Length: 546
Image (cartoon, rainbow, N blue to C red; front, side):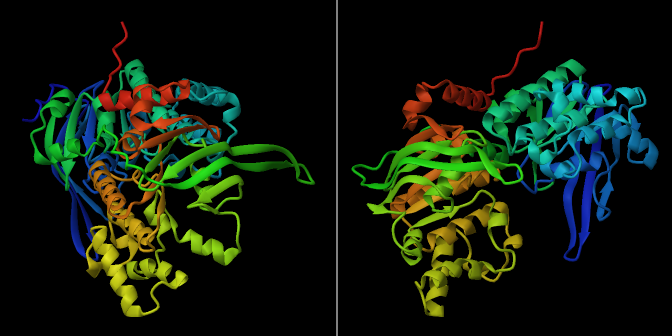
């Protein structure tokens, strides 16, 4: 049953519909949903990509494109109907009363202006702020959201900040005018687990200090469990279940809600294959990049992206590489694939990867393939799926006959769970999970022995993530594949890896069997990572201040 609406809700939405008119007809993105938010309450709108949750949130501020047709019996803010507001009162409502934090700060921030200017622009809309104190107030906002040395950071451009710092800047801009309702659209999706914990702690603290309500839009169920008071579950444009958070997690009623909760990664690592031979060895691997300055570009220092890293990976095993952004995880994977210059020893199946000419290296590279984080950017938009999959066969001369190539392409598509009649479609015609299956098929079609998986599930919904992880486990069992699995999601690593290697500032600070490392971490950095990840997973909530 729906929760009873309080006498004076802060926001009340009644029978909201959002339709988009397109060449293929009308799409009902939101279908008659109703919900409310009480003052000071955190409400989560949960669902997978395409469920309509972000469209519903954008409709509250009338930020949808002109092609959207929005109808509702009522959208009331503090009892005032907002659907009929003229542009000027609506503009005053945005920012001053309702503000929004968007999912991707790099696209939400203007790349050509320093962040100080963008913060001042938000503050200028507030008549209570003295124009002479705008810069000082902007620095206070950055300090309030936990950015170190805020005065100097005002002159930084968005690309000069880390992902967590950019998200903090967006939060500072949204809170510049002390809104009563903050709409947070996937505010931690692209962040490391420790940064996620910091952002959630920040939002919880600010909500409490400002007595601010929050509408949290996400597909991250552990985050919802940690900080939401009530949850609305959306599927295909409709709300299918609503309940207080603890009730929903302990006793979900709708089958879709139970499916979402069951999609959380397994807490038990897989069994290790017995007596597997060593496939990949790295000894004292280094990737150092020079820092050049001055007129003559003299080297004044080095960025040690990977510094004295050594490990072994056996056939059929998964080595999980974890750490925060900038720790050197991806650079390590690129060095193994010979996509980055490096020093040290890399041996693959007793072969020195540094020896031999370009043709020899190309033949070896066929045995090592990579699956990238974002399949939409790694798949060519101008090629059909069939052309993308057969490209590797053509380059390596593995199937010179067109009929053989097509048969192999159809075979690998079936193996990754896709219809063979999709060969003539383009990447944009697939969902995110389907595109990642295509990226895996592109790697698997060459029958490699090693797959480097660089954050292969971080951009996916929980249920799709579970499907991809299940597929990767099956492929590993069927083909004896070795995985170098790079991720900042420790829940995924615990479900997939036999061994774990923790990286910080280019160095390995701790390594060992997955269960042992998760149960008894020794290094303070590992302990901090696990504390943040497990706190999100178990749903520990901050207590209210005395």
